[in-house]
Length: 233
Length: 233
Image 1 (cartoon, helix red, strand yellow):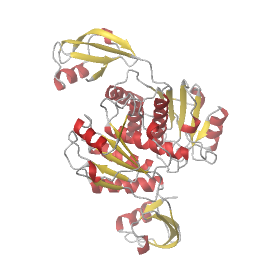
Image 2: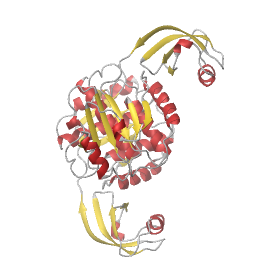
Image 3: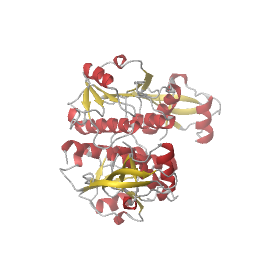
């Protein structure tokens, strides 16, 4: 069953764009069952009461609240040069399941500003697609210290000193949250690595293949999520 | 250092398109060091002897052969509707490191033929990017039994009966090869699942989030690769 997003399902009516999609493209009719998430953990179930193309109305019949995925994964990543690769990154890590995405403009990263509004739309689409009830937050940070430390804090970089410290080898049982830091093409500067290490980030490696930034981010998040799915946290 | 691809480095000369890129865009000059892979496991190192835009020549000075990544991952995946999503899939799993990609047109998959030549170009670009010496093979199969069984054979499907059988939980130590089967949007048919189970494929789950086909393929390959990178196979 299709899942829709509505920030305030209590209002009982969709805005024009979504109304048109539900009524005209998906052809929902009065009385049809409809499922919504508010992106803040609650799933609503109800029925369409008016399939107006401009203001589709619905009546909520039941709701339940879901726990966020544990551990919370906070991805901290350098902005990319190519907008499409950055959009792909957002879509994929949201599908996999993250709590926060922070774009950190590191010294060797691209200078253009990430389009946060566009990314939020992609994230909404991805939680609908993957049937999740928590919408990840996406933000631009000025400094690494803007991000609160997590239970486990990892930095994947290409400098010496990460040998055999893979992500799975650094994962303890049942952490509340994990920060994972992925650098730009050209890697972090030594100064940035030192700053992260001083903040107690652990250096890890993603293997012998040289991964693009967006691939590294996806691999790190997938590997963490699959690990904890396995140990059943 | 940039890595180039040449199917037959013994010839000592690049075709026009690659010559133009190396000489004109990257501005390689006579005497510059150059690194090439033949995609069949051998890395060549040499120097440019003629930076002609149409036929760049080089002299090989040394070569060494690399072992393929172990275990060999053979991805078997249903063709997707969107060409761009299929291209992403190829690029990302090649970066992560696979031996073979087989497109299997399952009953619920899109009917259009995968563009294998285009995918090969993407795969070449991805091994150059990720500094690998083995070019994965990409093929279209008619039946699942066209793919030789591996040491471990996995099928990720959405039907009942995969609870808690995650990919990491099904990975034994030091397999030679792993087949992993990823279904189309709409999943495999029960008949296809039965066929795979009869061939001794083990059913696995990728977690509670509903992943798009291309995401599922990348998550599966990433999770296998990170697992064995950890145990040092």
